[in-house]
Image (tube, rainbow, N blue to C red; front, side, top):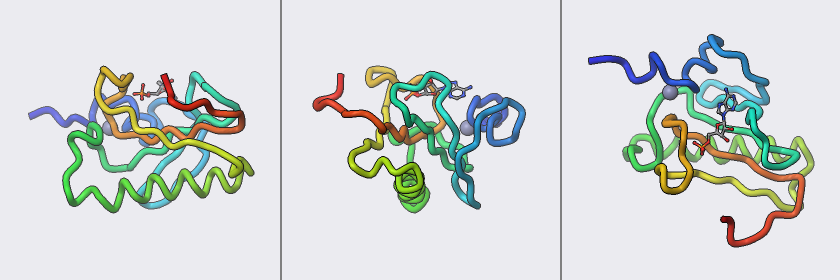
Length: 117
Ligand code: AMP
Ligand code: ZN
């Protein structure tokens, strides 16, 4: 069976095969600037472990999903955007998911309307 991580865009960014502006990393999590930012802060926080998205997550992935959220909170703290920011998981193509390696969008630095489109 082919390894899904082999050709995954975000796994390739983690490996350094594709350049990205790194924002944060630790043993479990990697974060980088979104290439098409929707706000002054638009960072993608991803687990080092490949899995396609929230739909595909298993109970053993609970901790790493939490770590991604906490890394987003830490980045928001460092960027001083805590007045208001959003962490977003797009789940499935109907919600705009286009890269199938779970990623948390951290969006902030401007007023954010509700509901999102
Ligand atoms: P989603 O549409 O939720 O799957 O989010 C995928 C995000 O990845 C989009 O916001 C894209 O702008 C972003 N993206 C795609 N390719 C790259 C890349 N090479 N470096 C950084 N961000 C990327
Ligand atoms: Zn991947």
